[in-house]
Image (tube, rainbow, N blue to C red; front, side, top):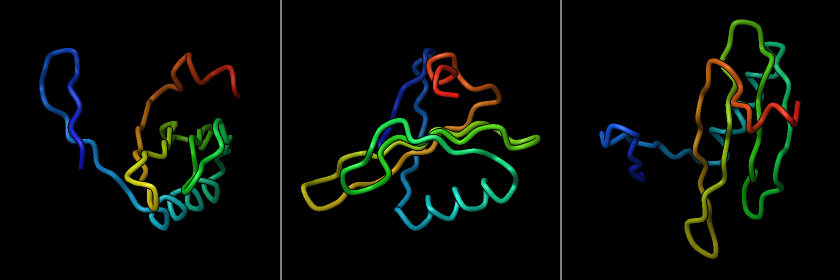
Length: 90
């Protein structure tokens, strides 16, 4: 698990997820009527994925994080509104 800081210098725990858990999240999100866009291709995992447009659900950014030469993990961030940075992909 890695730590990140927000603007108030409070520690936020950023959970990491394995490939199986992320694939289950994607499958569930798509079943709810959402859409998926691959922003960056992954090396060992999924790269960077944008999930959006599921009715009454948050937009989700999934990012592959390097662990070592043989493995990677994923972080998941949820947004009420898709950030402007990612809106250009929709």
